View 1 (cartoon, rainbow, N blue to C red):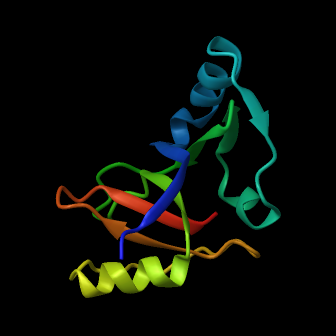
View 2 (spheres, rainbow, N blue to C red):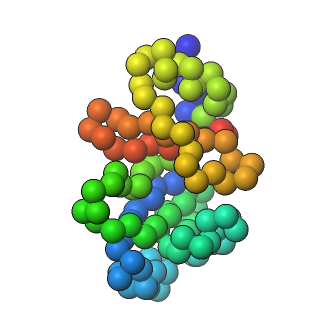
View 3 (tube, rainbow, N blue to C red):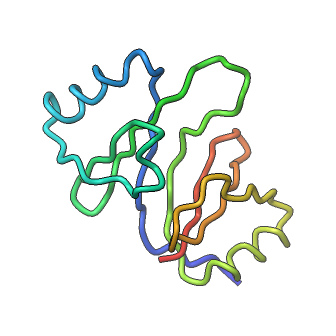
Length: 123
């Protein structure tokens, strides 16, 4: 089985809380990106989501160097999320569960060999 990646959905960039407003100004005012509403379940975490054509840029708060793994990631959409998950498990890829689920959005995470986080969600 081959995984059927259908679209690149979003990239998530992170900034410390102290730079959140400056980053929002940069992406919204300087670059002129259109801010779109975040799901209700994500709003309390701060940050912002921007639309760039069919792709999104998600801005999140994260304290760099706090010892935890970064939440910076890219997201791809696939057809057949369960089959994709099983394919990755069979290939020896570690699956990371969705620790902050969004209602109605089935997803999980993997890391590439360099440690980069990849969100995999149903198209």
